[in-house]
Length: 122
Image (spheres, helix red, strand yellow):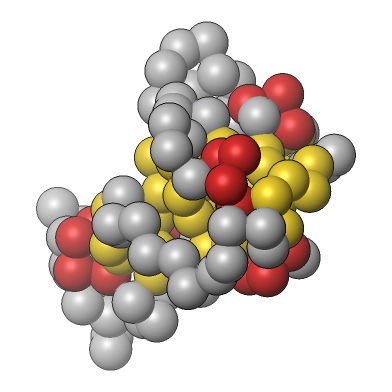
């Protein structure tokens, strides 16, 4: 392996992010959240476009939950091969739900979320 720059440390992915965190919502069933279908993740810009506001009761079961500043990343081809990933921002009530075909990465703080997307590393 190449030597790392001075002050850097080699860590595993799991050392810096929580992968697929458990569902945790402190909202009422009628509170709105952002729903993100796979088609709403733009693989070129690495952003969520056209997220939809939905009541929590409509999406709380059967979908993947994520929170503000989490990274959503497609886990199934061809979406994965196309680089479908985005940092979740501007979510209604700070919570989003989306396709079950998303992995969710939540930074512990040592890595900026944008550095976990393909747009920053690829």
